[in-house]
Amino acid sequence: MAPGPGTAEAQAALWGARPRDWAEIQEGTVRPLYDAVLDAIGAAVGTRLLDIGCGAGMAAQLAAERGADVSGFDATEALLEIARERTPAGDFRQGDMETLPFDDDSFNAVVSFNGVQFAGHPVGALREAGRVTAPGGTVAVATWGDPDRCDAPAVMASYRDLVPAPPPGAPGPFALAAPGALEDLVEQAGLHPRRTQEVTTVWRYPDLATALRGLTAAGPATAAIAAGGQDAVHEAITTGLAPFAATAGGGYELSNVFRYVVATAGEAPTGA
Image 1: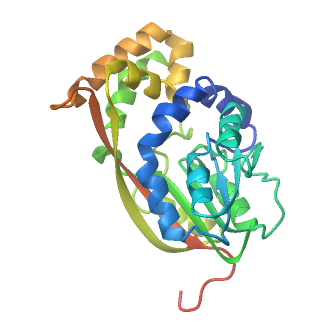
Image 2 (image 1 turned 180 degrees about the vertical axis):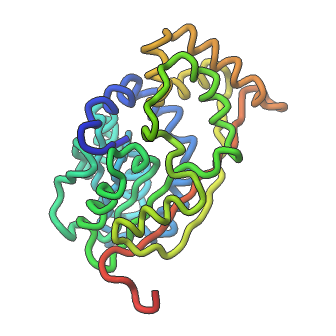
């Protein structure tokens, strides 16, 4: 996922360690969120769409299938290679999300899924999103929802002791999960929120091996493996997954809530 200035190299190493596992297993667990946001912004023929923090490009691919002209931006070149394979006509570039390499007003729709919270300066990152969006265009930003209503934090906690504690105030997956935090951030960036919605996703893994491949493709797990070793992380995740064993058909199911804000770029809309 694309972070803020000075963090792209570190984030690229974390999110690029297992790009195929991410693309083949983990990325699709949040497809309902991608579909909901693309529905909300009306992605279709005539949409010039940029996905900031596009990862392996599933959301961009889905938008292209709806007829949109898509571009993507991410810190991780290994994931961008997959995005280019999926959507050869797309324009996918690498770098820091606070210095987007696109001209002003290049797009009429910009989306970002679970990337802004990793930026060194999230407000600056969203200002860049607004800069490249034409006045009156749409910016949609999605993040994790209430961690108390998500199952993934319990699995993440299983390997937390294997990595050094982050410094106070360091960004993390749930940095914008508090009520109103995402809306406030959007407004600070000069965007004009129109509505907020929640989407529940169910992460399904047919067996333990698939679950381990998917879950360890994420950046926090990569950091844990680097610090504590793969065997220790696999053992911890196996323990953390135990409460989420599916009662029918085997495998595992985790329910997770995400939130997204749809906002307008440029001057405040009439009546706002």
